[in-house]
Each structure stands twice: as C-alpha cells, then as structure tokens.
Image: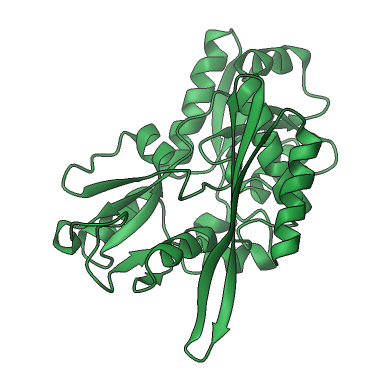
Length: 307
C-alpha cells in the first residue's frame, strides 16, 4: 500500500516532507507527496500575526482538512506553525529529531556595522512578520526599523539581496534544511539564551488520523524522538495555556540537562507612548526542574504576575 503524504508547496516544506518520505520508505512504508496550498501561501501580504488572529492555522488548516476528509493519510508540518490542539479524530503521531531551534540574522554587507549583538548600521530596516522577533530586536536595539516581510525562504532572501531590507531574521533550521547559499550575506547567530525561539521551532510534526493503519503508526513511532517530543510538548503546553500563537510575542525553549529540564522564556510587552509603542523584554527568565507540571505552572505564574 502507498500512503498519501500531505505537504505545503514551498521549497522548505517539500524538503521537509521528502525527508520524512525517505525515512518512512527506508522502513518499508511507501508514500506519495500530495502538495496542498495553504492560506498562508496564497496570501503573501498579510502579516502573520494579523492572519493568525483572524484565522488560526494559517499554514496548517488546509492540510488538516485534507486529512479529515481522507484526501491524505498523513501531514508534515513545521511544528511551530501547528496549533496546540488537534482537530477531533486527528493526532500528532511523530516528532522526529529536532534541528537547531535558534534564530539568525542575515545582513546585507552594505548595512553591516561592527559592534554589539546586532552589528547593523543605525536605523537599519529589518524584516520579520513575527511579533516575538520584533520584540526581541527592539528590546536589543530600539533604533531599528522593523517591518513585516512575507514570502517563502528564497523570496525573503531575494528581497534582502535587492536591498528591500538591510537584514532579515530567519530560523537556522530552515536555512540548514534547504542548504541555502548565503555566502554573499553576513550571518549573525542569535543565541537562544538571549533571543528565545518560538515554541517548537526547529522541529517537525507529523499528523495522522487516530484510526491510521497500524503499519503507518509503527513506522512513525520509529521516527519519533522522545527528547524532542518532551521538550516541545512542554513549550507548546505553555503556549496553549497562554492562548497564544503567532499573535503572542512569546519565546520558549526547553532543553535537557541530564534528568533536569531547563526552560528559557520570553514574553514581550508593549508600552504605549506618544510615538506609538515600544517593546520591553523584562518578562524574561530561566527555570529548571524535573517536573513538567511544576515548570509550566511556574512559567505561567511569572508571566501573569508581570503582565
């Protein structure tokens, strides 16, 4: 039997889905890719946080609909795009080994200026459609001109090269998976301890129907990575409790240190003023422990006390 694997049509999504396809085929489970256009792929203008506020699942909903109506048998998502609650009858069956969860900044050489965490000229125009990234950038450098940017990864790289932006924020994992050639640009790694990633960033999630064939579920079980699943489950638990998504400037990264879990968390807060608004990043902290419920409760307590 051949299974139908649903995927978005972007270069990155296809690369991720082909990777899952190859891993399943190595286990004897054959899949055909079924490209599906998401709302986020059709609409290249609306800022992501505005889109998610009106219609959650901007990049995932069409795949979930196809899974529900039987058009596909499994769907591969970037986990950070996937809502924390699955539709009835569907389940998150597999989270493979996680790639680098960090962000990075790619800078046009003409905008480079040595010094500081963000080596950019004063007032540089930086592209991102993420409120979290906007908050983190402006907490670090209030002089930056942060503007929305849309499009898939190659499109955003092209906009940077054409100098529509001085710099653009990317997920390291996306650049790594696509093996993007960025030698003509300056690369700044943004340490997760300071620029806290989005919940689930760097991980994939494979969704199936709850009644999926046992052969498919068993193969996905072989791809499942327990550590990545535990870390991202905690991150997404916090996201769910805060009822956030792309509309919330939230960063959460969980890592293992032996049996101890460590959470790094950030929640941006807007300060309204006569000039409009600015961001403060005082809601930033680290916490360690071995009990997931305790860690979630302490994180929520800290955030709710500060908001």
